Image: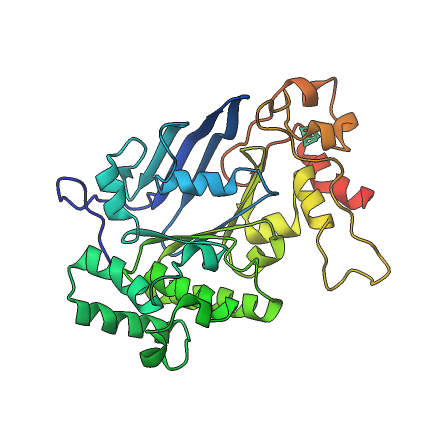
Length: 349
Ligand code: SF4
């Protein structure tokens, strides 16, 4: 396991019980010709070592933007990042680029959705796995190549000693995704961010990749952030769940809590729109009506209110005028009272 070092070379000490990754009041705003896009607008969450946090929501909910901010990958020329991102106690927001560069690929790494885009077609997979290892550890070419072979074996690529010299296009989609996992894990990162890592894969390969991530997490003890639009993916993989809508967290809890007793109407909509084994074949899925709001002009009050079927259950016009807060711990950002959150979905399905 690598240790995180500060710019001065001192290992930052995470105190007992302190979250390994702590995000507070994160805002990521993009300046565009049409105005300011509030892609993330006041997001907070914690993640402990060895745990997996699933972040779910529709496209444009802010999931990927959040994690690019954690990695410090936004272009400062048109992006404003405010709030706090602390990794093992070290503040990353506003940290010098050379600090972030040293942490990326070493202490924190990312697996992207599209392996064809993320891997260079011009270099062998072995070279692409070995390069970050050499850069961060100072290993020789021979040692780095050996490490690449080891990593390919670890992620289940047959004949790794031979395939290390193949190019990305010589692998199937599932095998390329394994190569990308090998690349992300080559320096034993403490934080792994997986952005829709299985979306392009068929269900069998998807299950294999998720199992592999789980096994490697057991081995390395990494904290994992798993970004997905698919609640089915997090059901067997994540420990905690954060549901995002319009750049904000709307529900939080353990996976079991959120999936077995969801409290937010948006989470109800996500669950009702996905197929399950128990769904009768003649019963159609129910998509959430309407579309996510423009992040140039997020609706006042609860951002979900133009699509919500339950505004009539809340007194007055609070849904349209008052932004619901997300309390600490197990919570939903909704004006419905606790009884309504617990019972309404059951009575209206
Ligand atoms: Fe629906 Fe109102 Fe709750 Fe928002 S606050 S989810 S609009 S009931």
